[in-house]
Length: 94
Length: 280
Ligand code: SF4
Image (tube, rainbow over all chains, first blue to last red; front, side, top):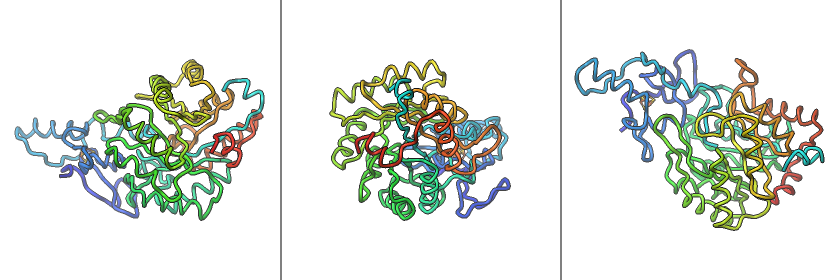
């Protein structure tokens, strides 16, 4: 099961792509390809344990709503999703 | 390798890391993702002075794939435009199963080189690319079988110990070739002192490549040039040309480091010279 915050979009935030790309509705931005594997629960990865953005937003949703639903909630998180990831070239997976 | 090699004017091998597997076009529109884009970027990088291109494979939407078939498409696209450049496949893959990490080695022909991550590396807040010794040994065994030269990726000083351990466990063809990697997170902190310590701790006779992430790319490449090492640049590791200004291509980053090498009096190795240096 993929993350409930995951969407595939051709455009958002004034960016356009030829192929739909992984977009995080919690962070309100396109996500890095490596993180998209977490969003999609590929391999042994799981969005509900491996993504700090999910954990932050799901936790906020739980607190706000007093229940355990995982409704997408548009980006109010202070991490703004892939904050560190946009520090270009910090991807260490050579 | 040392300052003596610099003074001796030994050729420097420039590697262009064209695409990577972490960020994509969401970070910079100039990053090549498709086989055709990677092929074109490889040819431009070679024309600018790169002897080696380091490649990862992606799906059409930019996401990672480790499939042999996709690496084959990339290699074919490179070879249509650049007959001589040395192709180096990544075997990295945070979060991917060990079996998938072997797939990039299985193209026809095999890549001349492939990366070999020497130990654990943290990603984001909850991921670690484990790179166990078992995986390192099994990847190395397949590289030997297929005639692939390993490029040892030394993410931090502990991985220098891991390289020595690998040399104890297995026979590595001379020269041992390792990339010293500097930057944030699990990487060696990017200071000149750490760079000097790292080159002191290399296995005897090893050739080293120098990789600084992000804003450290240019200063560490320059240090690599000065201390007789080789250098890696490219959009996988750094997407900026200078602060606030995206690099427009891999070739632009190669051209800059070639210009610096020229000013410093280090000849830039052709692919043939690089093959000779690395014993390919
Ligand atoms: S980045 Fe995290 S929160 Fe956003 S879609 Fe992916 S897994 Fe979900």
